[in-house]
Image (cartoon, rainbow, N blue to C red):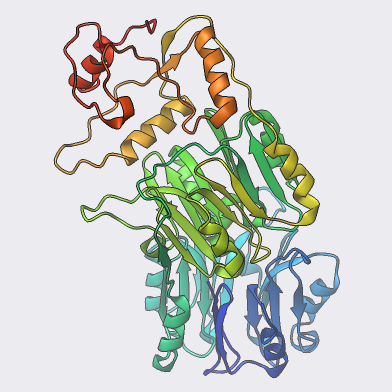
Length: 538
């Protein structure tokens, strides 16, 4: 969400994705805003015709930005920084030439009181945002969420204390007007009444609901993992033990090499990254600024299953304890009883588009192109990832393991090579039950699947005391590989509980027998009691 006050009391700009509205802005700025497909990362408006904007990255650009020529007079230091070799992230203009500029290297400010260094260091404390208000007031939000301010009214000060702040915009024309966005994506504001309809219209998120092609599906393990990056020529694709990536930073590269089998990866803004392997995962330090709520979950040791990072601090985080999301009132749903609807996947795309796929295959989306929507309805979706750089670029994997994609042509060879890769399974010589430790990833995955898939409304879900993995012997391994080569194994499971009757044949015989050595019926009859399971299988 972007919001800035203009240079007059009747001017402002608001945008969510490519949906935008403005009033009373300088003609020189409006000329650029009217260009087709304009999607901004940041914008600021100063005095005497000064302005700054920065676009989101695309496949052709890493995110161009522009400072109005009028800034050379009103904000000479800002123009000097613009003309240097430092890339600007955002600018805050104030009265009488006051400014705050964040570059890829540091933070510059006209007032020393607005910025500070780490104790015992010359390194500046990074800022989430800064704004100048009425009669010399100002506010800055530091990287850890601490808000420092001067001269604010009681109502604005209260709004900045009510919840962790991502961004604040103060009015230079009124002591009480403001717009605050919190880290969870919600907002609070006090604005002129005549602005309300347009602000509410842009701020509101409306998701389109589409029913799945095949209802009643369940969350399954992704066979091929794909993630788009926030800049051009940046992606990661993984299948089994093989992972290919391009354009990622050295820190994430190091963790991708260490993790082995990659279970989840997401690349967000400003160097924020998430990577999960078997039994461990990594959240980059840059996440602290770009996605503060995700950083807090990680610091609180909340087990994360997967993460979707989007523009402007938006995220969806699936954990063992539940799902967390920015704008959760729009992105997430609850059953009538109040329980969260589990998700298979979520992704944020170009121009503020987004998609969430619920556990039964229901799709809820916003702003998708015709090409992406066409791919949505080919088969039932297991996982879909959207590009933030191009509205037609995507990667989708269906429930049967097949996939569809629209990607830059330079990526095609790597993607095709990965699709031909089949992970190898290690056979064991004897049949056994292996008890999984609670710290292991497989334990977390099975536990999560059991918890989120419980549908009984009259019976409380039992607690999970232990989870056992079936290890099969060589003959069964050979049979399994023959089966795998023909049709693959959707759930990556294999079960050989012996039976002495015809229960389950052709989906017709559903009567439990009473033969003592029919272990399958005994297990079903005793509500899946393990006392009737043999430790050696047969």
